[in-house]
Length: 264
Image (cartoon, rainbow, N blue to C red; front, top):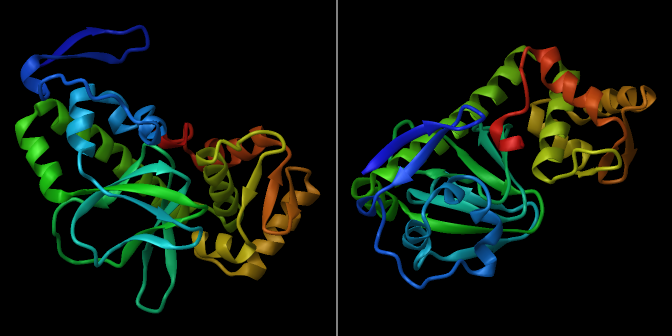
């Protein structure tokens, strides 16, 4: 049985799993390639026997930078990021794109059940990365069999939904400058580069696609941020010089209290 115990020091509900919430314990040990994904996100909150049930037999696929790793026309499946950083997006019929979220090891993406309308969407590797692809039937089976897994999936999909809504909020209400800063901060956060001297890879054209603008406008905003001493511009990316003002502009200046759970 899934039980709620006492409230922890930080106001978080402690979870206690009974034997019926997970498969029987085995001698399985977390392999090295799964360590990063096991340390955060959905897999970090599951008992080890459930983690084994999730990953057993699932294929690992490597993707070079720039490749669309999970397409909208694929069959329903869940992708766990094992390493690297990725960009989730939706696309229009004329090729335009809007970034919906950024992902790193431990995050999940995918289409979990067939739904209409079928929107053009996917995730793109921002650097060489690797995904673990779990078929929808496996996710359904585990959700129906183990309440602990179903609840943690709800938790994770709530985080995904919140990240997507935040992206739409910034795009709808943020200025071009705020959208540029927000994209830089989020890309830096998922790459663990949100610090002084942190390098955020990506061309101005790629940044323009991410925020729904054009390269010339993005270039102008980046030059202004450089003049203010907030960042420096290098070929193929930017270097963060003052992370705190950038984070403030991407959050409180937009009416957002803090970075999202997935950015921490």
